Length: 169
Image 1 (cartoon, rainbow, N blue to C red):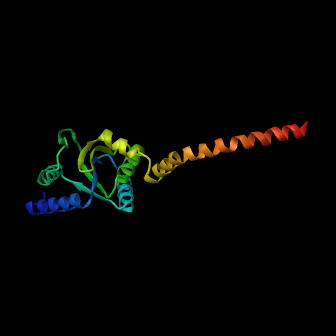
Image 2 (image 1 turned 180 degrees about the vertical axis):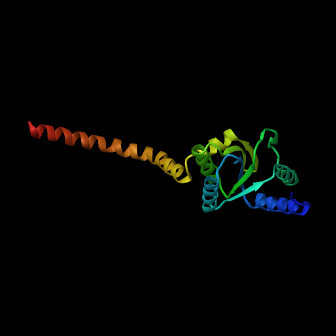
């Protein structure tokens, strides 16, 4: 049994992490074996994040103290794992891990100063990366110019095709 002092220290640590990281997920990891759990922690750390096992009651109190609302803890069962990240890519990393290992259950998350449910976590996790979005945007911006150049080249190309077909006859 943990003393009040230890619980207070846990609450302080969670509070510091919630202030430091902009994004976090609340998950149930009760079915994970040690190697899978270690693998998840390693991936989170490599991505610049942090994983912390917490007591649900302590988490609820810390969230109330920080005025972070919108979480429905009545549906949360099992061991509580907080996964923190500096950007939304933490959602993708954890979602991909949860797809491969069904014993990790995502309850909810925190994104852009707002509590989100598991469907929103899934939506954010399946968004393309920033680089891919930039590439798609660049392609859309280049399309009108590319089409205009193709239209300008068409009469010359058609003339060359006609001349080459005449020369073959």
